Length: 90
Image (cartoon, rainbow, N blue to C red; front, side, top):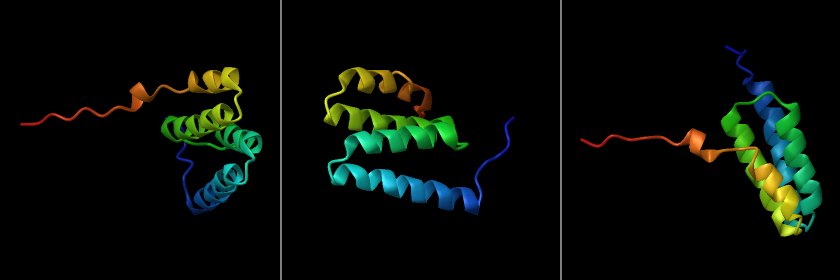
């Protein structure tokens, strides 16, 4: 089992970095947002679920500036099917 990376300092650092990444596409800076999302996913300790969310956002940025090869490369790095929940109804 890996060490649990989440504490208040982690949350503050993550949220600040994510806030920057989220703001970039709003000003037409999708390439910069892609870099911000991928750097965040690469450089901070986090669960695979959180990492997949960041890589999906990076992939969407690549699509917006028509770098479809990069978008596909990023999309292949996460598999949402791994995070599906199954619910049994009675």
